[in-house]
Image 1 (spheres, helix red, strand yellow):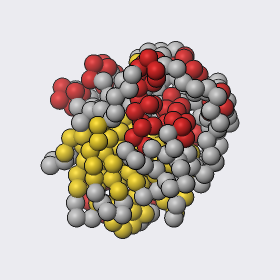
Image 2 (cartoon, rainbow, N blue to C red; image 1 turned 120 degrees about the horizontal axis):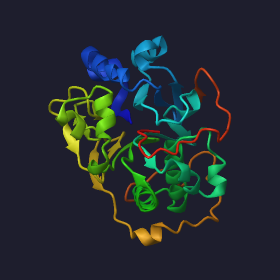
Image 3 (cartoon, helix red, strand yellow; image 1 turned 90 degrees about the vertical axis):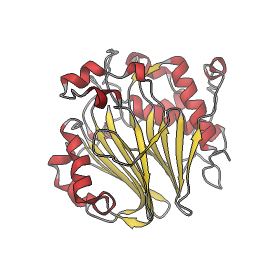
Image 4 (spheres, rainbow, N blue to C red; image 1 turned 135 degrees about the horizontal axis):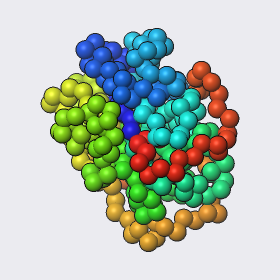
Length: 315
């Protein structure tokens, strides 16, 4: 399990200015529990920039430096709590980049030993790490290519297929595209890992039951969406099986139901799909909705990390 935060602002803004000193400290404090890595993403023009580490955010000066810097008007922050059995190293830290798209995920997709079945072989070969989360992202990019850049259709295809073939507890994610932020709220309250949360010191029943909840807030200058666990008075809950889509140019935030899919059809992926375009999986006109990585260590493209446990928590 992890913590997510995404933002879409009118002008470049730092996390410190966006959340305030106290708000940033409250969110960063979540890395005491979610201390298996952190990552940020923002855009340099149309190109995403990713900074990530396998360390705990609260303990790393680089995290504080980036949080105090105006990196851009569109970005995200991720704090990782790693799935048991999946390596804690930079390549498994979120977010993940594919062309002009970036994604960070909160949740786990079970059973872990069947993750290799999620993607066509040519997409599986594009993995940089070993997580379920990166496979989820590449599945979304694969479907985005098939859907000619229609983000909501790709999200519907991907969530339906994974739900039909696996037992995910959450597919919550922040997806960034040039000029757009998408916050995906897809999680199963019956699969909240309550005992693991209690073992980690989360003891208030309300906090446990709200663990996978996403909420958002709109101000005069920005829209922010984030996971629970820190003070969020006045924020608006994002319903399950919905997507918050925010247009950077207009600052219009739309809450869109994830289109339903016939699961039997979703179980039959078309494996003869050409690999995605190297500079973005969408059409030449960019994403539609209803229409340089840095790190302490490089990660080899290995498949040595496996996790047969169904009680794992996050990617």
